[in-house]
Length: 211
Length: 255
Image 1 (tube, each protein chain N blue to C red):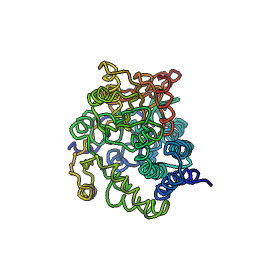
Image 2: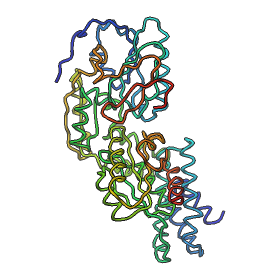
Image 3: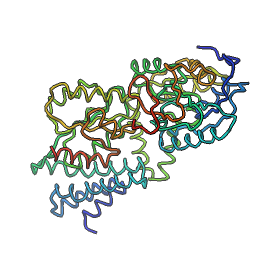
Image 4: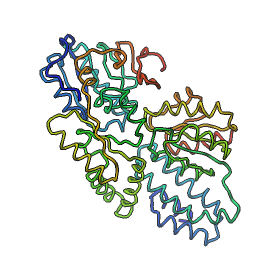
């Protein structure tokens, strides 16, 4: 197996120390840091996402894989910055007001970072006004709204409405979370919906590339 | 605290099949002692809101079984919307009664308005109740020990610690252990347990005295449309993203 193949496997298996060491070894062997991300880390997280979608693995396995990817990114990021390689797109993400659950949102942020997005994480329990001011400040290509509870879905409706009516710079809105569906996304006027973190990465790329 | 009624408030005119979550089992038993109109009872395990598709299918099966019983005229569901598990449930022969509630906490607190007001005031509330405590689902020392053992067996000690740290982070936004109960015999022990969990997590503890009215009325009536949804044959349950929480729509129509 090549070093990149081993790194790919280490991320899938959630071996964070191996992932870090293999990312370093790949650099030492002369690999381009951007290629390491594109050829090992992104495909590994996509594979993890696929396994999650098909119920082969569950949230804890996804979390240890995300941790391994973060470790590898920790080695690569300084080299990416030094090489002037910056993410092509910018995304904002946050859990809507009243909702404090952020596991899903954090996983989506990891997946987006692995898909060439600079991600600004606004955290959880984020009021609509904070989304609007962050869009004005950072002018992202994409904003992701998350809600775990049906009790906070009205806050998601309100946030989409606030973003659309505030005269913000044009931005694609994606919604997600356990109770969210494509039908709900259509009803509230969001541009996209993804049922899980892996699909969220694919959907995000499709939305910004079609803009 | 609304006292528990010793007898049904109105004549039990409608033979009812009750389908309920075990998290409410003790409370339901206390509120329906001697209620002859409840002709069937079926309880499902706690925590199925985590798997809403499975819960929906279990509830659909239970409704069908109840409707196959000629003695049953109405089915009462002691559930909230529970992660959208109730969406698309459709009775075939009987009417289906359900409280307008996001989850069981509304049934403990007595109204969706009270629940919403508490969450507006303290969005960092994590809810505890006797049923939830007994199921070891609530954040606290027992859940931590159980999860650590499970993660260690699956991932090894080091990853297990990292996952436990993620678990702590997942609850880090919470700051209040909100305990509710209907003051049944023995509930004080659970209240103390919730208090201990709050202490171990560094959270504030708040006791919200339960109000049995909504649960009692689900079991005995009246089923006014402000608090309850009655779904007729030919209709199904749909989510309503507003204060009504749920609505009935024609079974064949898109929500």
